[in-house]
Length: 353
Image 1 (spheres, rainbow, N blue to C red):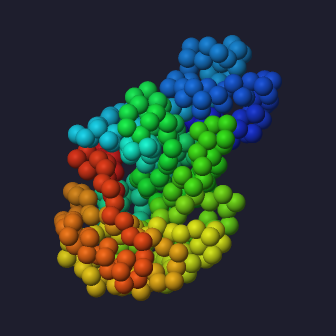
Image 2 (image 1 turned 45 degrees about the vertical axis):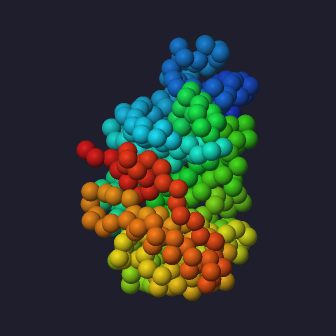
Image 3 (image 1 turned 120 degrees about the vertical axis):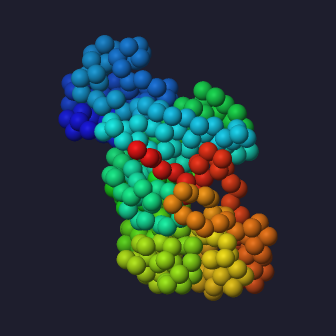
């Protein structure tokens, strides 16, 4: 990656204004560049693709700015038409997967924060590929812009505008904290994609110190925690990061986050047949979360090549849900699955060589 060039997607609106001043341009030109990026959703940042901008502005961008736009190396559409998965090329030759998901009334982007992942969750394809590098804030923002562009170009169920972002793609967002939070700041800008803070959800395997830090942010995204087990021993077997941040420390950080933000946390539970899908497992979850502002999201295991477990049957998922609702008054949903046929579901994203 050429560090001398500036990735425009990695700049806040004020930083873009200051950069234009450093280039010797009038600040008013920054608004035109910003509009080109986020309102026009430009697919090309070459001078020829920016006819609305003065020649001098185009020359500065051509000379000093990085391409920014991530090239589509591959696209796969689900059979039902609700989901599209994109393999987006990075400037260093790597790639990440990004997903457009349609639901009635909304379009959601599932965005990656890293190439690979260091957390090593045994049932996750990204964890199985290992860690390659952090993404920059610009690379994270560029994925959201790509999905927004696709939604506008090919409108369908859910409309033509990106409404929600879930940082649940490749990588552990809180392992790449600075870049992720800068990207969130850019995505929230009311003059840009104008996403609402409560329409961005960040999913973590439980980086406890970063959860505490997130609780102090002025506009934190919603938090989802990949729980998967209700005892330290069982969780560490599924989520190796639990050895570094034990369950007790994680739950204390989650309680602090909810107390500071007033928000309910979404606790994600991948249901693996015969391993964590029994009513007794549900009762253990209920006891663990009792008294906390919590919601449980049950996710039947999605298949990956590197893990031989099987997804829980729907009957087991519903029985689990009933225990939490009837015995513990905990709201619990079963994940509406999207893109399983194209390996675009939870835990299936990866980039193979």
